[in-house]
Length: 170
Image (cartoon, rainbow, N blue to C red; front, side, top):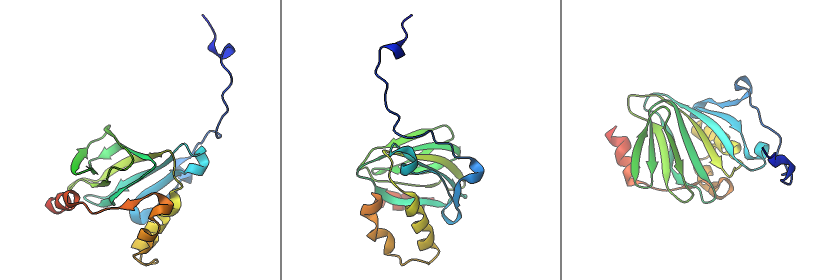
């Protein structure tokens, strides 16, 4: 058997291994987010957070990213996810990856709570965005602050008749 490590040039390690202990993760309770690893911790490879939504609670409003894909892995409950103009309901164990430029949003399915792991790749420094969302929802920032930060966080808000209809029907 050939040992490939003897024949391949060593690859540089772009960042140190990342281990985030559950008890040490920052919680953003007003929006149900647990901040795990931001892009600076992963050498830009990804940013990751966990979302825990109460029964029927809204998560993110319709938006898209221009530079990153967003992965949703459902841990518990049911999560409604807008993908383009369609709304899909994802269950525990389901995985959904939304590519750049495709509008998306998410919320707990009516009558269900939801928990999901969300990964954005390549990574975007997003933890300040979640903190800003929380301050905005708490009335500590003017409502227009999020729209003014769209380019900084590669999160561009859109209107979605399909999402609005799905949320009203629930």
